[in-house]
Amino acid sequence: MPARRNPTARQVRLGTELRRLREAAGLKATEAAALLGANSVQMSQIESGIAGVSEQRVRRLAANYACTDIALINALAAMATDRTRGWWEEYRGVLPAAYQDLAELDHHARFRKEVAVIHVPGLLQTEDYARALFAYMNPEFPDSEVALRVEHRMKRRVVIDGPDPTPYETVIHEAALRIRVAGRAASRAQLGRILEVSEADHVTVRVIPFALDDFAGAGSTMVHLGGAVPRLDTVVRDAPHGTAFIDSEAQLEHFRKLFRRVREEALSPERSRDLIHQLAKEL
Image (cartoon, rainbow, N blue to C red; front, top):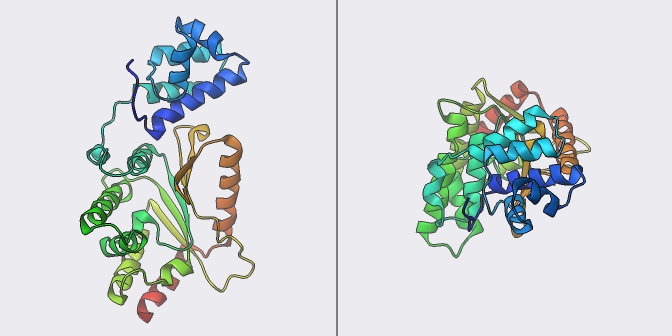
């Protein structure tokens, strides 16, 4: 298969998982390459996501690596054969690659769990809220650049608003609900959007109130996307110089535990809706 100039996060993840299986089997890249009749350069390209790999080769490698996790093998084979070209492709080369990577991960996720402390989660944002946020964070952007990012964010909402929605659970700190990113009317509309979405059966919204004692989780902001099997989960976090996609098992388990802790500290969905209603009345 021809080399890719800019592999997606999902393509890179496939290569990463194949490398992890090889390392667990105690094989060198040259030894794995020989199993495919390839060379070490080709194996390096496969494991970095630069080169594609067929389903047959994925299964051959897994067999030679003595991998017995059938669910994982099937999931990796599906990733190797996936040719999905979603709506996000129209933004490739127009917006930073992380925008497309996140939309693609959204599309394939079995579930989405999120913790938001300062800003309302992207999938719950209204157009006015998103526009004010992008414009403030990027004051040098012309209106056209801001509009592109807002448009992309609104299209991403299909994963919870569309005909085949993804199970979605979020914990939002009261700070994110009170900060007026846009004006008073836009803030009221934003709270209304959250309340409307929270009524859906596949959506659960919980709030961490200011009144909660001993909450030291201000840095717990995250997005946890469920893979075809737990090993293929991904945690997404905003980093100082871009978006970080986290996939090591140790870190994934850390963030699973962190999400469970934050969720346990939050109000129930019913009490959370009551608090959001109260905040909307105050505007």
